[in-house]
Image (tube, rainbow, N blue to C red; front, side):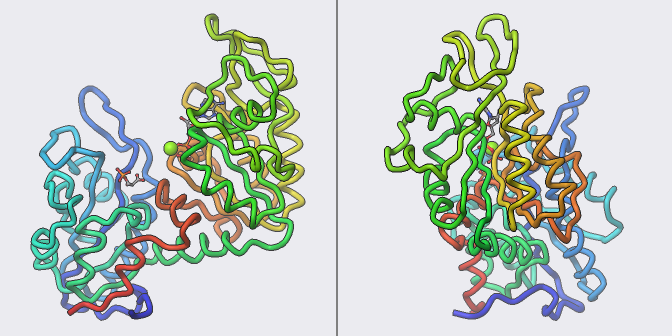
Length: 367
Ligand code: ADP
Ligand code: 3PG
Ligand code: MG
């Protein structure tokens, strides 16, 4: 077992460097042509690529995946649009390997595939924190075969998310989104570390239901919330919400207990947004994952309200989640104060387990 080495310690002059990145970014199709819709993950890899180039790397070979093509070529998931976006963002020369997941051996962590990839380079850099919860060949196989290093963003992710696991007293966590059961281990853990866990999005509905309050036609998860969690007073649910009528989509805001049978909660309400903003302003540290409303349908007021507070108040914060990062993309945060994680599932798994397969793989020495 070795200490993880940072890419700024790597001797790369004259060497071929394999850089595994996570460019699994949101895409849109315009006039039948797929295009990058959000480039947070692409921009996050730029400092590492620039460092490698400055330090004289002979060749930078980018390894990435897009979507879940299931081990075969899928024309809609080629990396060409992502490569084009990267060339717009940097003048660093690189070559881009085609979508790794076109080969079923990537997800199977096939040693022969890892060997094939490793033979393309002399040094391996993991700049794919957001994919490091996957024990795939390019994440855990290749670093066993080459001198391996963590990318700059990867290192920052581990440091910032580790800080979120040792929060100062009085810190506040905000958890939104959907599917309570997938976030249950995280919520349980955060209740042991944070003064309060503010629960919005569809997750709030599950606790409201478990507390015996009306929930109308709101989205509810399949599994009930465990009783010990439901009665925990440090698990805070919204006091008011935006409701949408199921058939007409007519909306109004009101006290959560006044929800009608044909209405569902689609966002936290203005009073809750104001109350939670006050809690955030007074907190020494904030961790936030999950949109507080159905942002894709335009119900963004709660999510944007809290993002605005965090952008303005100067409280140190870590924000992450695939949907969360997309929902708050337009906000400009002070990078000294607010860290926006590129990780979706990887961030959640790191917060629960304190490590990831891709992190452990960097602790093994190349043979
Ligand atoms: P992240 O990717 O940031 O971890 P999630 O995937 O857990 O976030 O949750 C995002 C989803 O939660 C979005 O599709 C959003 O529409 C949904 N959501 C948020 N609030 C509600 C709500 N009140 N009812 C139903 N779905 C919601
Ligand atoms: C992500 O977007 O969270 C990562 O790229 C992992 O993608 P996956 O969930 O398809 O493994
Ligand atoms: Mg999501």
